[in-house]
Length: 262
Image 1 (tube, rainbow, N blue to C red):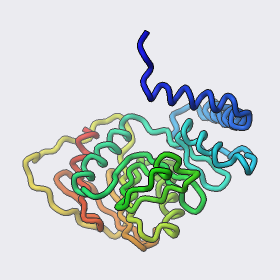
Image 2 (image 1 turned 120 degrees about the vertical axis):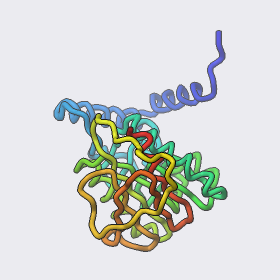
Image 3 (image 1 turned 180 degrees about the horizontal axis):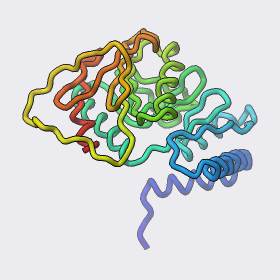
Image 4 (image 1 turned 180 degrees about the vertical axis):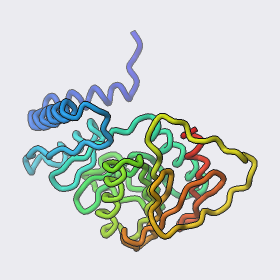
């Protein structure tokens, strides 16, 4: 018989741990039931599920929150859970952005979908960059040990009201508690129609020009410099063969995103 790998053993241990803990099991079941109710009511694809947080005993709260985040990949603001229903299209963009940023930020830790704690709540930036790597306890038990927010925080959202507004509102909420963080939001078109191909693939990339207001049609990018509030976010139309220079010194290459939309 083939010996199970470490990931399988870890998953089995996690499931067994939840099964043994009646509090965890009860809370997880409540969340599962609420998800079923919501999905049964909407009967369509959703980008964000907003769920009321079940009550948890204070002495078990942090461990139960760890279990919730491990199972549902959720974010939490006070007594609300937000579960992002990202598909392969978005996940490919997250990974590609991370792969592009790592060689540009050689001394940083750049990862996708990592839990951090802001003002006592838990968030998962689509892409996060830390110029100082979180400690081992923060990396392995991020809620109990309060993993700090990244210094570069990137969100990717569809150009749909619920998904786009969730990303913008999230940045607006966390920014006052993240005075050293630079924020980027990338809005991509929603639908199955392929994005137009690059008509000049050999062109040298140029710096994108900012505009005075948020674009109506995607794709576009918003950049919030360190220390600025959400009202000062700078918007850019995204076009082939252009890039945006971040305050940390790295570039967001628009072609990286477009290659995955075509």
